[in-house]
Length: 347
Image (cartoon, rainbow, N blue to C red; front, side, top):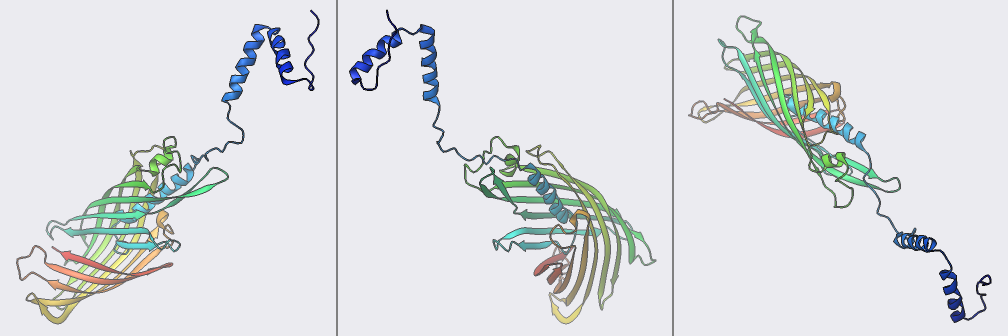
């Protein structure tokens, strides 16, 4: 048999098919099997021009970690009993929505002059709305989140009198705090691959727990007379917050709550009567200076409040509270100003 000549382009299609059959028949079986396998692989390969879904499962753990420290810093404002930050809302100028909201309820008292044990406690709620940016290198999308924090603080101390009438006392206090941060990722399904990124798992429905130990020192002057009452408190608090547990090992943080504050209040009768007792007017002044990690965390280092209100005396009736106060306060500090309404009760 002579050498097979491949068909020329000018030949009819039927002739070319007839020439290909003997050509393939002359090839070894192993070569035919290799060609068939290559054809199958080529058929299963997608076209190079097919559009791929952007991968937004990016590594932005450092940003989440920094924000975890930041949210514990915000928690530090809540764990410290502080009048200035007990009711605070900071609005995001770009979205006109509150980016930070804080609210605190607390109080303290000394058991008696003969048993000078001081007890205090507070519970606070705050909401922080950070926004993260996920990027695959060519595209980026904003991931708005909402972090809700609940924290509580208890304290026990002892009054050491500095004067014979015990109006001026020195009060060391041991404080312990416990808080929780829960996260809610407000984004459409499919933005990111939440199943494979542990940081995303924290942002979407994750939680972070924190505890704090520390103490406070206070100088308290209580000067009560029928014609007026004077309260002055000078306080320094230092509580170290540390995260524990939680749903994500990738997000852990720590922060120090350090606050120095001054609080002063003047109460005197107005000449009016209600509930068979004199109605008093109330003047308040407080100044809080934030130190350590708190300094500049919200754009200010200090807050000052000026308050004016009224107080009702309920001791003439069988009510479980002895006095009720409503005070309107003007709050101002570095780049911050506003008005708040405070309610208080004495037992």
